Amino acid sequence: MDGFKAYKYYMAIKLHFTKDGFDVFKNRGNVKGTREAFNARNDSYLFEKLARKFPVDKDLIQFYVANFAYSNEYSLDSFSDSLDNLMEWTRRKQSITKIFSDDCSRILMYKHKEKLSEKQIFYFTNIQYPGILKMFLGKQISIESVAIMDSYMKLLENWKQNSSMLLLWETDIRRIEKLGGFIKFDKKKIESVIKNFVDELKD
Image (cartoon, rainbow, N blue to C red):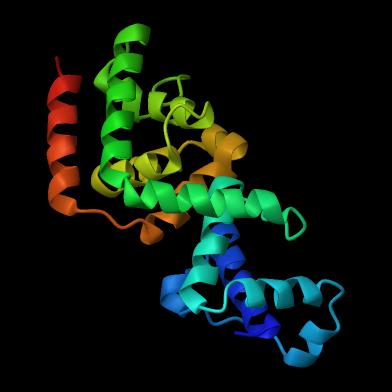
């Protein structure tokens, strides 16, 4: 690992999270850039620092993913905060089933408290935004849980069809969608949680 390689990984992950037409999995992380152009950057030393901190490729990639997932605007200067994001991302990955299950319970409580229908929880209705989106924006449920829910219920397809939602929250919706490929979970366990969750939603 060297600074130039660290920079190219950064650009690949940044493009993935900020551009609809770029998919890091399909592009295999390929981005344009020369070592000469990198050396001319004023911040090249920061990538050299990251290369020393994360000599293993996958560890540096996870560092970038964590920061784009949680703040969507990674700052190379706030290194302490960036490491906190990595720690939180790692913790959530290790407890993803429990986090998802807990978030499902929070959604059920929110539904009953606000007296919402199942449709109002998931989808845009009239002028009302989805309950799940409101909870995510209010930091009541995790981005990981929304992304997992979307993989089963295709929520974002509905959300992206609404122009007012895109106008206000396009960046957040894209961030959820782009994170999906990085979230690994036990499908049998998650499907069991979802089944129970959907059954309780109908009560």
